[in-house]
Image (cartoon, rainbow, N blue to C red; front, side, top):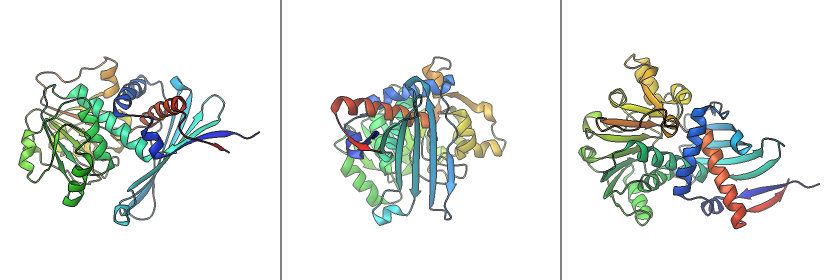
Length: 328
């Protein structure tokens, strides 16, 4: 007997999930993660012999949907110069009760939209309600979804984009200017950070991408680019001064250089993490209070985000009769 498995390309996935539904999905994902109702081991991070490439594997067991998922990710920082994506990924979904393979789908867009949705969710929970200006560091696929994520929950007048490669920013603005109502600009002067109500960092940097002294007194920061101890986007001074929220305490204490650095330097300890974002969703911890100045949502990405996003995609693919059915 032939076994059938659903195959979904990136273009097909885009028809099956949008930012509002992804943000709603991330509420469920982080809520269940903080309840402890899922099994989400720390990602396997494999080095491949040179500093520009690596492989990541992220498994998850999600009992609420009776699903098991596995994301396989290949990263090569030199790929853009070859006109290839820096991140290439594939996602596999299984029935946790029978072990049957359900689906194989593109993992690149899955990762991008769930990451943007996490920042949208965090921005909705942690930023001031009156926001006018945002800054995004990075001009790649992740930055595009950061833009859509924050614009899904707040109305911005101006959004500034920074990347060391100015041509990337110009292309980014041309590509994204019709996706949001905000006006998009290249950030040429870091002093403009003092006007930013929300900042998103979506880079692969190993050093902070902005200076603490250039921040507005009350600002919300989504740090989503760094996912290894040697990576860092946010200055330690900013982390120390902030009310710090994370996607997963266990994962961030193991993988987030932005947090690990000030801990290793004995500037803070683990208790400086105020809450997981899921604890806020579950009404176990507070969100932004009127007297809070800097809030940070630090995310290294969690496999629970992938499986919930994949579940939304599969449900909509079935309704819309999208995707190919392949014989195993």
